[in-house]
Image 1 (tube, rainbow, N blue to C red):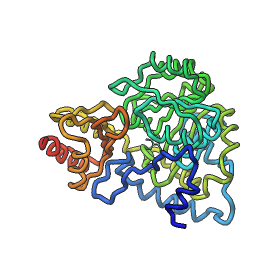
Image 2: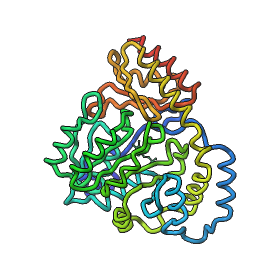
Image 3: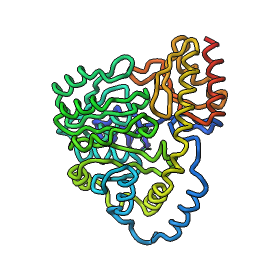
Amino acid sequence: MSDRELRERIGGRSDLADLAPYRAPQLDVAIRLNTNESPYPPPDSFKEALATRIARSDLHRYPDREFAELREALGSAAGTITERVWAANGSNEILLQIMLAFGGSERKAMTFEPTYPMHSQITRISGTRLIRGRRNPDHTIHLEATLEAITSQAPDIVFLCSPNNPTGNTVSEEEVISICEAAPGIVILDEAYVEFAERPLLSLIEDCDRLIITRSFSKAWRLAGLRLGFLIAHPWVIEEIQKVRLPYHLSVLTQAAGLTAVEFADELRSTVETMKLERERLYREMSTMKGLGAYPSEANFVFFTSFDRPAAEIWQHLLDAGILIRDFSDLPGCESSLRVSVGTPEQNEAFLETLSHAVARS
Ligand SMILES: Cc1ncc(COP(=O)(O)O)c(C=O)c1O
């Protein structure tokens, strides 16, 4: 039988028939500003320390299943206790583990869109019913409407994202508290970009025993290739997650890299301030370009709308110049909008220059 016949006859899960795989383009171009990675590789001293640690590792043995040393290190790096920390292969896997533990066919999860598309994707992958809530036209949370939606829909899981991807804005402490009070189940606060924001909301964990904060090593820590993310939550949440995680899910190599990363925490995060200054420069300069509307951001990217020229044309114009950014115009609420990740000053300069030509051509 041909592949096509097999797909038609056997197929995959019927509830996922209309689900498209995650496919942000990964193109080999000179300037990649499309996936919010760091433009700065980690320092050689980090790589050398990691190589030494790996050379001492027992690769013929399974890793420590409970990754006790790494949990303790992550806890102290994040300013919390070991019992409140759990890690996985990227914060995407953390989100999947949360949804496997708390979602399922009898449960529903609510997103407020536009937001990180993997929140809805992972909800569906876990077989959970998805309810898509909306944001204000300027992409901020409409607190009253959000609380009303949560009260009437009673979702078992609420997703928040702060700073929000792709729009860059944050939710306030008061908003998270009100949402936690209204939500009948758990609230996930995705803080993948928190190091670039004015203030983290970690202290809310003290009072909100159903809040789960997720973090990533892929952004401010400059280690997207490592695939390490973690959550901070009350121990009862972690006990539920332990039921669904696969044994030995964090390899010896990942644990070694995570421990080394925590030892190099200051060096790895030392580029954050430069990135924030560059983000402000991008925002300022884009705000002065005719035919563009840029949104203020507290992350390592800037979201913008093209009023006069279709987003696809702007995207292509930049790509022709060897600069890859992300076109979000397919996402509901993001019509004609794009997102650029903050790069090095030289990359940002090249982007601004090319963008100014692209909009001038409209
Ligand atoms: C809001 C948000 N959460 C989570 C992730 C996933 O990060 P990780 O690389 O840790 O899986 C991303 C990646 O872009 C993101 O934007």
